[in-house]
Amino acid sequence: MTIQVGESLPQVTFRIMTADGPVAKTTDDLFKGRKVVLVAVPGAFTPTCHRNHLPGYVENADAIRAKGVDAILVTAVNDVFVLDAWSKSTGAEAIEFLSDGNGDFAKALGLAMDGSGFGLGTRSQRYSMIVENGIVKTLNVEDAPAKAQVSGAENLLKSL
Image 1 (cartoon, helix red, strand yellow):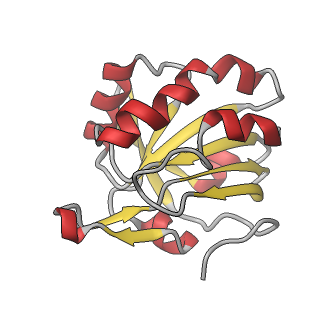
Image 2 (cartoon, rainbow, N blue to C red):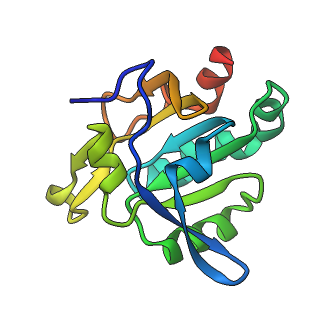
Image 3 (cartoon, one colour):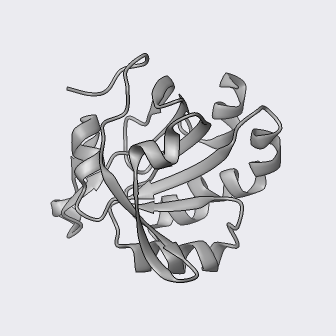
């Protein structure tokens, strides 16, 4: 079952890259007591994610934060090293990248997708959400992986 507005995020452990290497962070570490924009993509460096989805959040990071958002987080079912390389290649310093390497978070949300037809295995559906203190306030799920409109930064800004 897919997570709904008003529900709490599931407790999982992500990996993030720091100057000292990968570090584990729990859902509580990232969301408790904060207003967060969370964006999920099927995969780092994939065409729609790289050219259409992430750039809108990079370009609108200041406008999003000006609406009282404490953090902009991007998650994907990729390892922490790939997400770190993607972050550096896009100049997305204002965004924190969360590795959901095994897809545990995507599965727990009910937002995993089967990308095996494209050689990708289990991935996350594309979505954006606004989360306050671990509770989903807004959820925008795309109806196709190649789209980045409903979950795009411009649409999300209207919800803030």
